[in-house]
Image 1 (cartoon, helix red, strand yellow):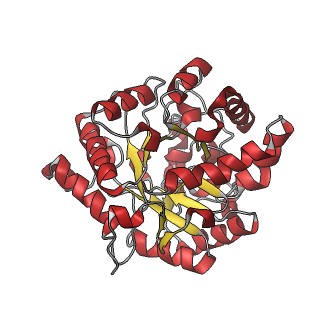
Image 2 (cartoon, rainbow, N blue to C red; image 1 turned 180 degrees about the vertical axis):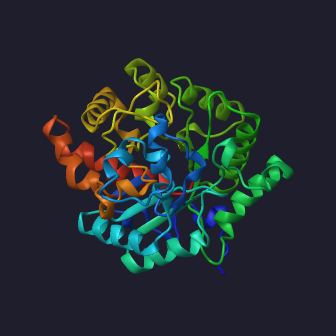
Length: 355
């Protein structure tokens, strides 16, 4: 099995099939889950009369309900069928996609043999898959987490990248799960990610807490621990920040901004019911505004698919949604094609290449 060094990976992108030249990435979607057990967010529906839906299989008869209360159906939160993933990636490729960042963290959110299955999906479809490593939010950490030091956790991440698992190597640290405010375990996880970043040269991708102050709290923590903000991706921008001035303050730190909830058109956001999920139109208007302000070189796109209802097989938009539908809409509202290409081609090349 190949082992790599930080120096040996410098300037390359690590996929599940090995390192490649960033020029070969093509069009990239920067935050997805092809295989995930996301039952860590399973919750009863707000209306008790709907509780029978929790154990139903996803079907046409309940799909409308599931699209709104997606985290209240157990079957919906399991993406474990490798054939479904292969079909989706074939469709992704037909619509222009060439590379995808898969950031299901270590621990209970991964399905059995996740790393091997991601490699098989890549081999079967020709899609470059960049696999994430590291730890998610406090309630989904692996059993060994509490018994290991920050340095020991960092070593797990480092070895996942440099040594790999059965010949499959991670190529990015994330998604690193954070709540607001950060818990002690999440600070430990984030610090281990920063150590691993220094030792490998990989980028870090962050799942922020569901509060507008969360991203800047995380930035402050990274800076205080000598992490590299310019090598950090802040995810879930559209469900976290609703105020433009707050977004611009975040952009000025130098962090990458990942608009990675594209395709979700239900305004009800069950993980934070007091808030809401903007429409795709609102999302791309926000993208254009921050792009026009001079931060286009820090923008990335994704869908963060983690449930069956968003797969094409189940009537969803699929992983190709951005390429099929949104890029043209971005042009219609006045974004230049060159800027759009930077977001889906040039920016991923920069952040995914090891330093």
